[in-house]
Image 1 (spheres, helix red, strand yellow):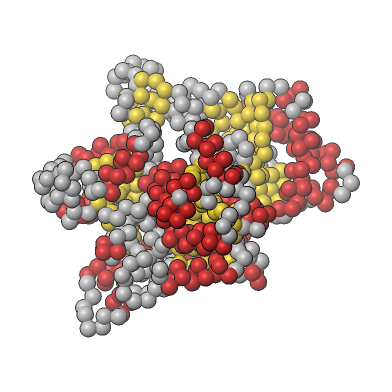
Image 2 (cartoon, rainbow, N blue to C red):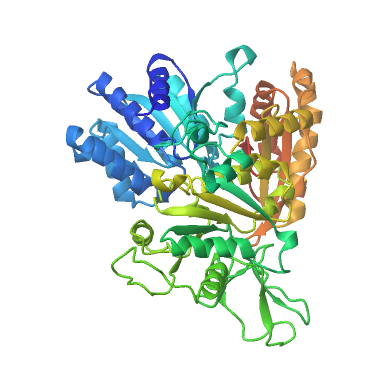
Length: 606
């Protein structure tokens, strides 16, 4: 292990935690998890560990690593998985194995936090920043926060790991003297034979070779301020590129250069389908969903219009339903269209040397796509990932599915095609999510130490001077977090305040909003008369009811009301007392047509 890994493990062994493991992509966080689990199991012959990942597609590769490491000592049955992609009998077998103690290690997604693990000694939450840990339907909970709470209840150590921690966790890991509750552990350097210092921000690969002239790549990295071992981030100003260009000329040339060297590239676009909408230029018709206030996405591969909210699917019409115009065209781009366009641009490029025996010299470049549409059938994701690892793919196109957690050893160039949308979102968490996603995508490049120094991340943007991209270029998450936390403190947003959303579903938008507004008025009129409650209400802000961003889904109208307080204790106290008022309000005549309501504490999407 590296000195950084050794130091981190020493702190995990000797301190109580909870711990926030802040490690760069490729710094060896998974090895730290493996070593920490090994130590926990050795302390007690009955000890068990829970390791959580944000998405199902990350479970198989993690299970393979844990099985390879622990099966020889503890048996094949010692490692089990729990996630929603399993059948009910499979989940039951895993649950019973954990409950009986036969399974020493439980791997899973957010639902695994509820598994019966009687001898739990360690909980690991990998990629703790990921919004997938938050359940916003059915039982509303944050698996990350529940993991911390469960660790406290059962006396188990908790390790939260991420290269881009959530701002809440980052804030909680400030020094204890400032009110921090987590212990922050640092692993800023990538694993690999990079000569020189292990500290981020130094460029000792040049400094430690005083008698050797630096290479052009080293000079570029030093000038850009890129930390040793991490990919060089290049920003492309799309204002200077041909109008409507999808791939800038420099990026396309860089991709061709990587292919010529037998290396792989990854193109990231977080939008699946061929195009977000079909459009008629004559009458303005768009492919709206009749059951939702959203557009149906055009999927060219099966010629369908598919709503990603309610699932309503129809064949693409031969002509515009509004005016009969046969010339209806797609607007925007999804991964399906991006894959097609990239294949056209690289049609004349040939593979110069054989990475795989299946493709002799002179074969066309192979472009592959991985997203939710290409991985619907069981086992297809593993097959596609195996093809990438084997070198049978030259350019991989995909959504966030390929940006997280995967260890692609031959990818040396990653490109983000259109990331600007989140910069001006009404959601105050959008920049945080974008930065995390881009950092995760950057981490897929140069994971092979022999290729790491030459790896690059290309970001095509119309806002190249934006502070988010400046921090990304320096791989400087602390600077980005400091800027975001300062803005949130000034605006009184989490983590400097506590929020809850009350959501209502009804047959009409009027009924949904009437329920929320009536409950709000009742709270201020009735609860103000309860003994001791005026002081609580003084710390609560109830905003008016508004339609949700997508206000109709499957013919159900949806509205929401934001509840905010500078004190979490006051918010919880208020919500506890308000529930009886909400139940009584449901019976009001103006709320006729209400279907359901729910309270979501610490919502991620507002």
